[in-house]
Length: 105
Image (tube, rainbow, N blue to C red; front, side, top):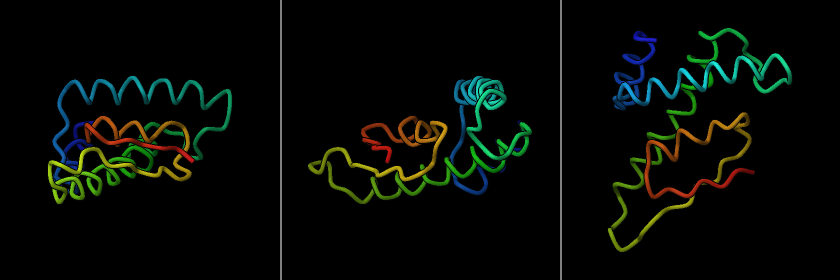
């Protein structure tokens, strides 16, 4: 997971704390377990899930953060339409961008 964490930092400018990495590990474990019971994601191996699903989710968080920087303080929270990410990946947007309202569709 260290190589993946470095990739996230270099590519998206997001430094993940040890607490965040621990949460990703728990999420990965739960996702692997539940994916055996029902088809939540197409990629099955832990590496595929980290590089494909988790990294894609974090990429969206960077966009939301950049947009938030351009808002004035009087604008308040922003709303994000989460279209088709599935398996609960919208959580990364909310964790990385406090004050964001994520609406799954």
